[in-house]
Image 1: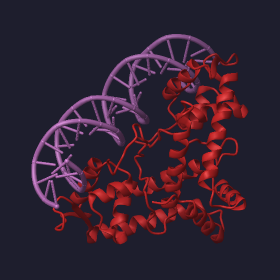
Image 2: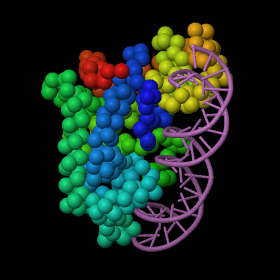
Image 3: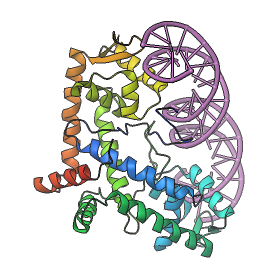
Image 4: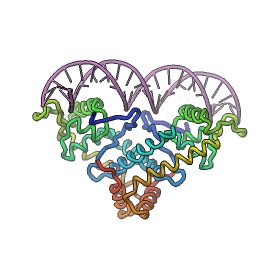
Length: 157
Length: 157
DNA sequence: TATTGTTATACTCTATAACTATA
DNA sequence: TATAGTTATAGAGTATAACAATA
């Protein structure tokens, strides 16, 4: 048995996702927690045949924004060409619909389907479970405090 | 001027690094803060001709662990083959030395040079500045609280 | 026989440019 | 002329396998 098992397509970011904090740097802590949360979520989403990017896509649509592909590209910080592949895949699975925006026939509006909403809800529950598990050692107040602190330092969109 | 300017080699993770939080998910906040911090740090490190992975490498050595390449691979969650390229590059710049571990001649120990320590110190200051800037809206107590909360939910190594 | 480091290669994902349709 | 979307392709980064040296 290898001491360094690897899943296929495991995400190893270009930047460091260090396995241990060094010095007193906020970023070491932040990166490590982010890594744990991300991999935990990805693992759970696999069972639903979704990755984080696909989930986020559904989330933004469900959120009521009915974004165009261009808007989604900005929200996900993706190149528009990647959004094509992303949304086509979800559309093929009948999780969303890509329709022409009548007020600007160049644009495609993304809207959720019943099946898409159902899968999103399932995924959201699974993700919440991972989040709660990660912060299990915190009191509810501290969990809220963490989220609040992160919220306060969010750079303006 | 493009509405969607892109730096070359800008990191766009496989997973979502969403530009806006959705719902009440911890991960949206965490990812966004992580993204802001990471890109901010990478920008500063560019001036020193370092990326985060290289900085982390120096950091682990300076931390006094004198790790072998194998150990560094685990710390950075990298494949050993990638560590070769990584450490060779830093060795060429005389920032570290790769020497044979006498107690196990297969292994290579990494140790910092004077020049490497100097550059590391510079980089650490620059990173600290980015971190402080990110949390500028927080009181010192809240900054500490955030770091402490993140520390408490770190998964065991 | 197992492990560390190394090299070479295949593969995945991203960046870029060119193109169509619409504004 | 500019913008949304699309397609094709080149490039960067990662995973995998094979190998040498040492244990």
